[in-house]
Length: 392
Image 1 (cartoon, rainbow, N blue to C red):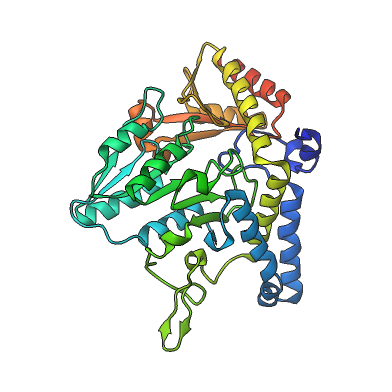
Image 2 (cartoon, rainbow, N blue to C red; image 1 turned 120 degrees about the vertical axis):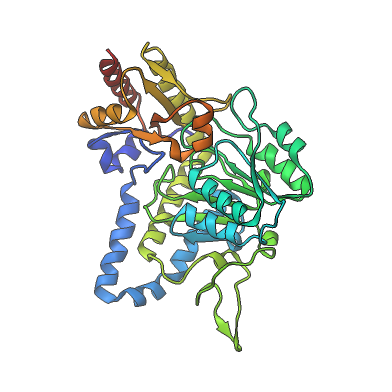
């Protein structure tokens, strides 16, 4: 199957305005997504938000069902949250309390928000957060992880595709080790959803989260949280509300599915828009998307590496659609601002996003250009020429 790039671009109004290389932050949504959102908001204005919430309950459940299909999960294992960090943080806070001497093992590429959350909890308990060494190519080493395991390890956490590095970590290999050791395994798949195939059964994770606004092309303020059904029984959320733990027979009754991590207050318009985005992705096929993104990113890296003043900062043998680089003599912010003036969107990403990995590579900031399946060769040519002119 091939991708009808012309049709997809015709359904994406932003393509006529900018050359967008910032899909890792927020992609350009298709018309179908924005129409779903605005049409629901209009119905709320006419008939009442609460009333329309009741009316679309089945449609919101269809969003969960589409998400389950995307991840090869059951619908009972899917929660819709306001952000990936919200879902990941709540799942982490629901783990059994850390004790003195406990250990958390993480990859060097861990997202800064997750890292801060884990460190704070470990410091309070007298536990430790330890970094698993990397292989020579910069990916987390499964062999090193296996050698670090003992009966004090309470969690293995992995950011699958880092925000500041084009590598792809060996999530399934790590999953086999975690599963064999009986250690909970959390994955941050924020950059993975709709960029690479995600199969939670094959990966073997207990918790996985990802945002709707990135390669999935959904709205801001939406995210998916997967929690393995059997693992859910081991978790105790720090708070409940009328949706996650309604009061029944004189006591709260927590839900027995992943909606335990949802709250009663949500934007149904955004959740419906997310469902449209997921179905749009599924109709194209993530395998097909992966192949095109891989081809485009490989071409972009090669073209940029031909510019003497440009240094590529991507590791790994298998790589994503994220291309990290710097331009000699210019700060990443200067590059971003200059390109924005030419209606070319890239990101300037600071070390706080992946602080351990950036420090290990001696970087404080990088330019990030990320491609999507509807990026064109002509846009890549335009970006490369603009950077070459800046570097001259």
